[in-house]
Figure 1 (cartoon, rainbow, N blue to C red):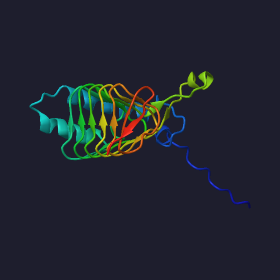
Figure 2 (cartoon, rainbow, N blue to C red):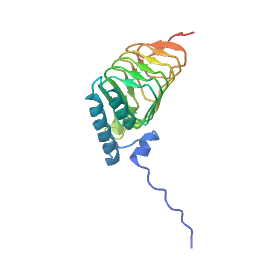
Figure 3 (cartoon, one colour):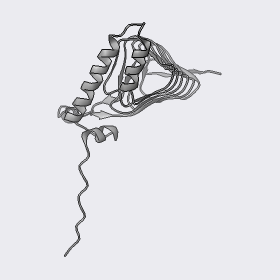
Length: 194
């Protein structure tokens, strides 16, 4: 009698999302996770400046990991929250958005001006694939001591090196090395910071 190898279990849509493969965002597990994140961000966004311990407690429930001394000014929005990993000393000003369909790692002492947007989500380039509905996600990594100026947009798959400053309004489409000032659309290195 021939020996048959069992077929591997099909990958969940969540695992496909985290692996950078096409996935269906309407999957019930992912919908439930986003709903939970919406509930937590709604609660966070309704807090006042006098409720810092409550804000921290909500962020600890929302994020995958949170360091010490974290401050986020409401309103703040994210997709899942559980794929955001924040180091000590994080500061986000008003109206920041993180689409964390893939992991988003924020190093220590990361500071963001108002309306910074970090997008792990993207879509197929070919229209015939895109209109079918599946999405893609790519991880983002922001190093220690990074400043993201107001209105900066960080695109999927980008890494920003330690001690780098990204100018206000920049669109970061490619990775940026450590110890530089970078700005523009598309963002490019302006000079090295000593």
